[in-house]
Image 1: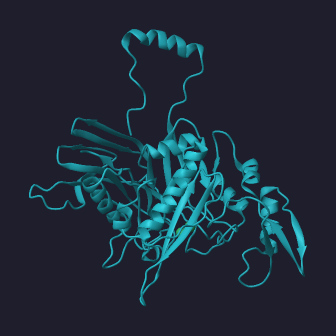
Image 2: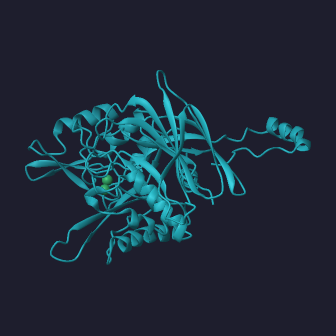
Image 3: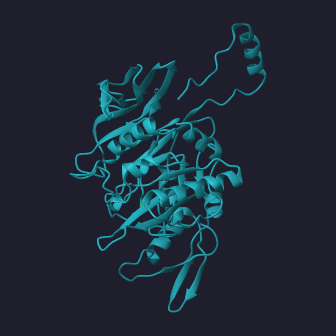
Amino acid sequence: MRPLLPTLLPGLAALSLLALAASPAEPEARWWKGNTHTHTLWSDGDALPDVVMAWYRQRDYHFLALTDHNVLQQGDTWFPISERSGSRLRPEQVEAAEADLEVTFEQRAKGEGQDLRLSRLEELRTRFAEPGRFLVLPGEEVTSSWRSPGKDGRGHPIHVNALGLTRPLPPQQGDSVSEVLNRVLDSIADHGAEEQRTMVSHLNHPNFGWGVTWEDMATMRRGRFFELYNGHRSTNDQGAEDRPGCEEMWDLANIRRSLGSDLPLLYGVATDDAHHYSGNPVAAPGRAWIQVRAEKLETDALLAAMQAGDFYASTGVVLDDLQADPEGDIGTLSVTAAPREGEELTIEFWGARRPADGAVPVPELLASGPGPELNYTWTPGHLFVRAKVISNLQHPDPAFEGERQAAWTQPVRTR
Ligand SMILES: [Zn+2]
Ligand SMILES: [Zn+2]
């Protein structure tokens, strides 16, 4: 979130214009829409990976990561085609996919029935990727669990998506949620260092099974992303009576990270976590996504822009521009949204300030006003500021009751 184009020195302007005339213009950064969390028959989704790719590509997404549990789409995996109840792959689905996508899937006889070979990542790339139009990001949901001790002990799901990886990474174990979580983040960061590539890891649905608390999130060392919104209806994103929702957890964790450590602020993604492509509404696709600002639709460029915080999360609201301009210990966060027809927007600035009496800061609504444009100027004593843009429009396929469409920017450190 910085000004994008360097200011030309006046004396060089003419020269630069000449240079521009002689060579193709530099590509300008723009927003690319994508989903970084979805499932297929490679794990517990209910659709062929090809059908999932086509679903997103046909709806003008620019990138997609298939993030099946503990697997990358590599090698030969055969899936049974069956008419039995509970079957996730019926003969008519195979026929429809072959007709729609103009492909022929490899099949082999198995006992009385027939198996289909699931398409590998490289095959999906060949079929669906197109430079500047659609990018297939390698992904995996590294799926670990930690069991608390004692007779009331229970399992805590700890799911982390790895984006940009080149080999599958195994789940981890440890003596606490924080230890398991950090071991997974370490394994992804180490893999990125080995491969000398930018990778992104994001903690998924912390409230699913009440697996991960905001205190755990505050300890994340080598990964800074988490799902502030997950489209699956069973992930408790809104919290419960005695448990904060994901948005409040975000601010609570960032307050602790700002005060007690040098850890960077956590960034929030919104994802579908889609499992159901055949009418089951529980984890349907299309509920949430991110928009990443980059010059090129390429894996390294997109993931580097995410690492720089140059992206926002959305369930429908469209943003045009975001700028953060720090000057010493004051600065301005500016948000410009792009309302759609009939849409009215409210822009809220959230963050935390150090109370004068030395008490622990709490998440605060710092300011709010009507869109589509609003700025917030921070002053000494602020820890961080972020913006949330809320629409008057209902979500067309809500994850929770009464949901309105929204967008969230990344927090900016202000101290
Ligand atoms: Zn999960
Ligand atoms: Zn998932």
